[in-house]
Image (cartoon, rainbow, N blue to C red):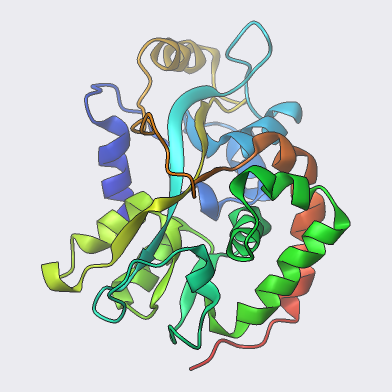
Length: 278
């Protein structure tokens, strides 16, 4: 299962283990609220992206870890990467190629949500990474992203969690798409060497990962967990020193302010989406 591969990445070179959840993309804010406020609490720490952490911390679902009131403890970076099927596509694709269904016919797969997906649409439409959030901060830029998605939506298979992305890749039903890097690597382990998806290393969407402690965790377990997270937390591998020019850091400040509004618009857009092509 992909969770096992993710766990291996997180816990390597670290003897401490915590009962945590790793599928960040499977959690809505409602899911996070349920996990964080469950009582009695059995989860010591939850690994989330920094944007979700900021929102949940402001709602007091997690405990502050630092004197500043900050909840999350840095744990590296989540990576979503462009991948493709080399048995059907011999040239490594770029963002714009995701939309070129005439030249590269076949289904694509994306995360079923506005974050990451809107950024990909604008990147594919020729917006430089440095201008993405300048565009998304305007109604014209948001409209532009959704118009771009309109062009491709019959060809998209959506995934809502790491496990869904894993099963889509394991079925080899898509030509190319964007998925968590650990999921792509996990799917490769069960495939013949000649039938593996390949990763486009120049096209990376990355965002900080952080550990959070649920607000309902007992004081004794809280002290134990804080000692681990503040001294030697399980950690995803760091980003390379020099990132490719086509890569993009997902803006936690933008999404902390716009996640609810753009989430509502994305869901309304998705409700009008036709069924994927057979």
